Image 1 (cartoon, helix red, strand yellow):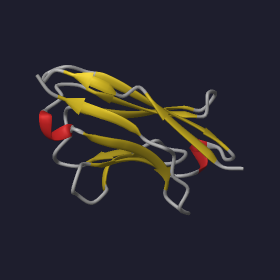
Image 2 (tube, one colour):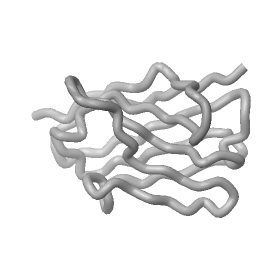
Image 3 (tube, one colour):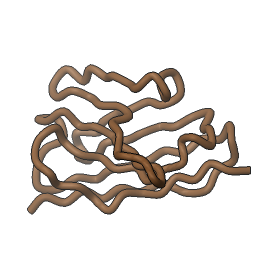
Length: 114
């Protein structure tokens, strides 16, 4: 059974940092392209970043490039998102997902506000 559990969100001031975790069960994260998505209130869900299987190549949306870092721990079967220099426009629910299927976790809320 596939399960994704995101955690690590919270309330942070602009310029602060958070590290999100996505623990996966039911498949190995290093055999799929794994992405972090976010959905802000009133907006569509968007892909923020992804990491490829095997080689671990990473790509970022322009809005987060240079501030966010995706990584993967194969032993823990977990994908991480380090978010630095957070901005109010980063406020959203963050989800992780592989590149196929439609299995989503519950997401984790990130709120950037002073």
